[in-house]
Length: 505
Image (tube, rainbow, N blue to C red; front, side, top):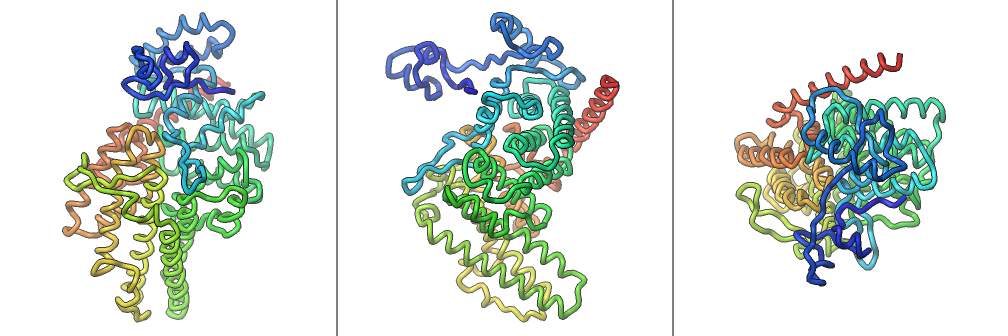
């Protein structure tokens, strides 16, 4: 199935030219001295009870204007039937919102795909076949974007209704097919997971969807994900699984050696995937630290020593990663420029891959150092001195080192929030930004200014339409203000479920 490119001007579409989608005019029109008409977004939506748009395109165009006005001006708080459209239009919404530009980065002469480009597998999964469960999930993902995304044009109830329908369809499919992996099933759960980001009802709902996806992935051996669509889905979902591990402080299966190496046997990992592979081990270490509490003196000594060795080993591996990619980690790959967020300058990067790799490298290093210092202070019987950090920190103490790394993380946000980063930008910033936020919170008065800066970053991300950020920062000032929105969506979800049950009866 071919996805219709929405960033193609009408001139290039008519002349069948390759349009690069630049603004205010594309390169083709500029080179030919033509007036570029721009990129109108004229989505065609029809009421669901009239059936999906098919057959006569003329009829669909006739209803497009009226329905678009409904989406732009409709009551976003009322319960209505979900909107519908040809599936390629829904996929176009998803790709245009989620897939960064560019989706492929050349590094050391090899092309590497950006994680957020996984959505581009959707047309291939539907090519020549019909999968109702996947279709419902794609619709839920797209309508959630249209109703809860950066530029909402659909009723809030439409997104929630589509999500409810997709979940019901997924549940029926699982009962029918049983515990068998397929790319279609994995993509279905991914679409539902990301729909929850745009219309977050609760943290537990997002966790449940992601844990379900992890169970789906483990239905097959890691050899299943070495190539093709399965590999793209695995690579696209892997960061989310690792992030969940950090927030729950529980080990994740992708940290196991076979899951860190086998899926990349045919296609070598990018620098980002390599550093994420190292960081995947941290949630399991955090789980071990939590288990130390309440144990006997002897057990604590043995367990704490084991954890310390793992943390220092991970620091060494992170430093080895940095040394193996001098072009990524050197000062030549990033620089400072005047900032739009706060008084500190922003960090700018050569490309999105370098930005994402360094962003997470700084976060992982900060987490390791902070937990080593916490173990040293919590269990003085370990008799650890400041000398253990020799060669690992550049500042006078651990806190100043972690604070410096956190500041660099915040300085990188403006780069990641550029329009061309799409959804990939804010989602890739969540874990590093969480590390920075926690650092500034424990710093007290000494980091009060940085904490306020971090709060302003949340405001900035929210103003761009990415409301899900509050789900990962419930203690933030903005999250407190957003509690009403989540409660409203939860109530809508309940009302829609009741109305669906009555309809089905």
